[in-house]
Amino acid sequence: MGKELDGIIVALVTPLTPDERLDEGAFRKLVSHLIAEGVQGLFPAGSTGEFYALTGEEKRRLIAWCIEEAAGRVPVMPNVGAVTTAESVALAREAEAMGADAVSVITPYYCRPSQAELFAHYATICSAVRIPV
Image 1 (cartoon, helix red, strand yellow):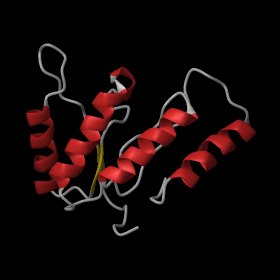
Image 2 (spheres, rainbow, N blue to C red):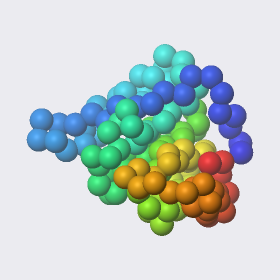
Image 3 (tube, helix red, strand yellow):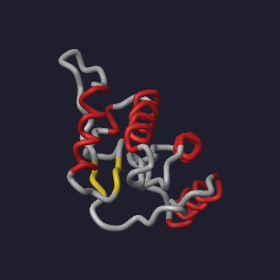
Image 4 (cartoon, rainbow, N blue to C red):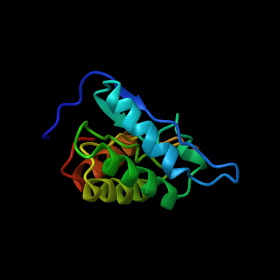
């Protein structure tokens, strides 16, 4: 990995317009403001960003906007956690292709995987990308 994940990595909120659409301008302004204030990394599309209420396309747009706006100034580590391993793998691969420095993955929710299933879930995601998980 080219950039060290260390220091203050901010979990970003997801600004919405009054009609509940992603507010790209407000999101980009937030990213630039946080970088200007000295954070060492950004964590978009996580639980603070209400990821569970976003569509797959909305998550991809947030990740892309964050990476574009950060422009290499700080590492970007988006959440790619999902209910299924396949969805997490797909989003992790897309985040890597967009230029994410690492990805974060939560344990699948609304199900109770065994320890072996959890291991397989994370191992599958880790083997699907070259960036840190």
